Length: 88
Image 1 (cartoon, rainbow, N blue to C red):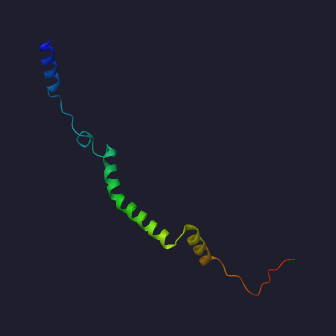
Image 2: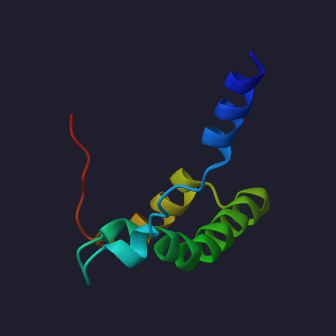
Image 3: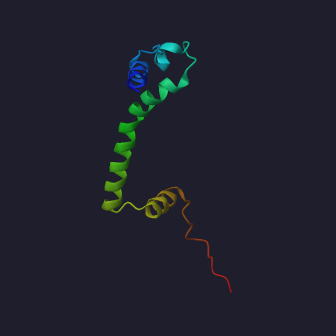
């Protein structure tokens, strides 16, 4: 019984073949998963700034419908006051 325990412990503690990380094993430009962390780290500050600006703008009163209405009114054509638009 004791020899089985020692044998099992020896098998568990025996070093195995080390496998290189994904970037070391992959061919150049072959492993696209390596770029996702960098993409996330680059875009994270922009997302956080956009979220903070959005919350501050909403608190300041810039609602999406109001801003869209003001934007459309700015580029809408002005009515000619000489035209009568009454209908009967």
